[in-house]
Amino acid sequence: MCGITGWIDWQRDLTREAATIDAMAETLACRGPDASTRWLSPRAAFGHRRLVVVDPAGGGQPMRRRRGGREFVLVYNGELYNTPELRRELEARGHVFQGHSDTEALLLSYIEWGPACVERLNGIFAFAVWDSAEETLFMARDRLGVKPLFYLERGGMLLFGSELKALLAHPEVEPVVDAEGLAEVFALGPARTPGHGVFRGIAELKPGWALHFSRRGLRAWPYWRLESRPHEDDEAATVAAVRELFLDAVERQLVADVPVCTLLSGGLDSSALTAGVIRVYRRDSRGELHTYSVDYVDNDRHFRPNDFQPDADGPWIDLVARHLGTRHHRVCLDHAALEEALLPAMRARDLPGMADIDASLLLFCKEIKKDATVALSGECADEVFCGYPWFRREDAVTADTFPWSLKVGERLRILSPELKAHIRPLEYIQARYREALDEVPRLPGETGRAARMREIAYLTLTRWMPVLLDRKDRMSMAVGLEVRVPFCDHRLVEYVWNAPWEFKTLGGREKGLLRRALAGLLPDEVLWRPKSPYPKTFHPGYLGAMRERVAALLEDASSPLRSLVDVDAVRELTRSETEFDIPWFGQLMRLPQLLAFLVQVDAWLREYRVRLA
Image (tube, rainbow, N blue to C red):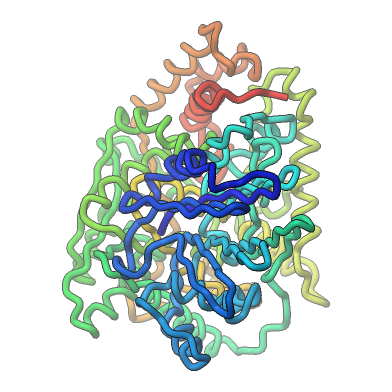
């Protein structure tokens, strides 16, 4: 994994812009702490920060290769899981490898197949290739959007980078946020509309999209999208196919020349992932597998079960770790550390995010990084197999909005009348919701409940899952930890997408298909444990700290937050003794997280010197 950035310009000699490229790349140092390199030419310049995972000697970037008198230069962030297959085919076509990195396999794939190479890739990636002879740039992002890639095109210039901060480091890019950007933050946030970069002029290449830039201009297109078609396998064949695809994805994603571990919460997804890894470790005599979990000081006393978080993880983690024989490590965080990490988490996203839900993952990854460079996570199983509460709650199924954001009133009532008039949040949410529904690939003849479940599944995969993938990427890469997500293997996603709803809910349970597919890998009580999300703190001290911080901001005449919120409404929240009946966003974000979100907004406006337009 790495951090990449670049600059294409038809007007300037970029061989003179080393300082700017270095500054852009330096913002990504956390993503690539092991090496920093650049490549300059008159029309194109690339910067790269490397995290060494595969082929330390031969995988350096920017990587350059020549063929037929043409030079191709690649910068790449990600990991390919089908490198051996690509290598065999490329060698059969006459290519000679100098190392064993997936970087080289990717560059030679582009040289051989051009833009069509993306259709052959199995992995997570964001990359850019410069063709010096044609003076063209090609960029692509993986199908599910695990790896990020932002860009800005203006007057014959194109800038790109793994994170927003890389573009903002360019002297000609101003941190301007207009009404649409504010609507993204205050009406949809921490979610974002696919392709939206929040700052004016900045876009994000959408998942499964590619981009071509030349003197003739910029063209972007989707090279992959979900397709709906009749599912032809019966129940038994479907269960077997899911098991095979999942275990293959897990094994492929163990490739590394550095230590690998897994995240283990004791839930179905992380336990299944760990069981899949253990099978490979035992077969290949790879030794002991290290697993990691996170919890919070005094959560054993303060935990309160609810529909979204039914029980605590601790006993389940012990059960799974013993059953699989892993060497388990517990990371325990206190609420003071969470408070201190709020702003580092915001800086990692370059935007206000999921507050302490982000901060805790940042601290968790920081501890894991002390021992490992690569971790596998069970993230995204709920998106792929429809495990969230909003697939079962009637109020969410029938809602005419995004089902993870039903408490729109709670978040909009804290906005100032002027901001609401400026961004028209209800209209903005509805427009983005309708836009998403218009994209749903319909199955001919499918109606009623099945059609609605397909809609919610599509919304979850394309509008909710990116929130968690952004979170996982930014918080882990902020400390130089690579986290892989086998449930995002596109072959598994494509197959499960078309499995009928009655298969997905086999046994009358959420993720029933996955549970059946994993039979025998886990103890039955773990296999059928109700869904429980990533843990959060329930300590009253955290809520108290957030109340104090927001109250102080309301009294600070220099706070940029004051002009954007209804001060009286927010002050009332700081004094409220009542939690929301359901989260205002996702599964975990209630009153403490709303207050923490406002703390992040204030710091973001100040630190990024955001100019509102």
